[in-house]
Length: 73
Image 1 (cartoon, helix red, strand yellow):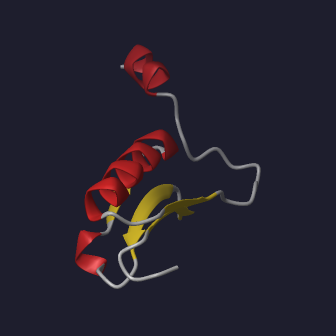
Image 2 (cartoon, helix red, strand yellow):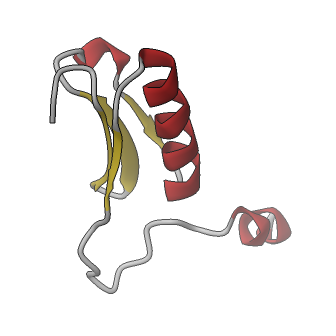
């Protein structure tokens, strides 16, 4: 990956967009979908590549369905 490229990956239960060589532009998200969308848009603005690195399956659910949370409240 080159400087400015955007990498989306799972990190300790969150999804993170990391900008290579520019850590101040990196950001974390609650869901994979949010992170992928934001990462794709950021890479388009920067004129760089966007890569999604899927996490290894561990059997632990990290992306909760927000609709279930609202029903529990």
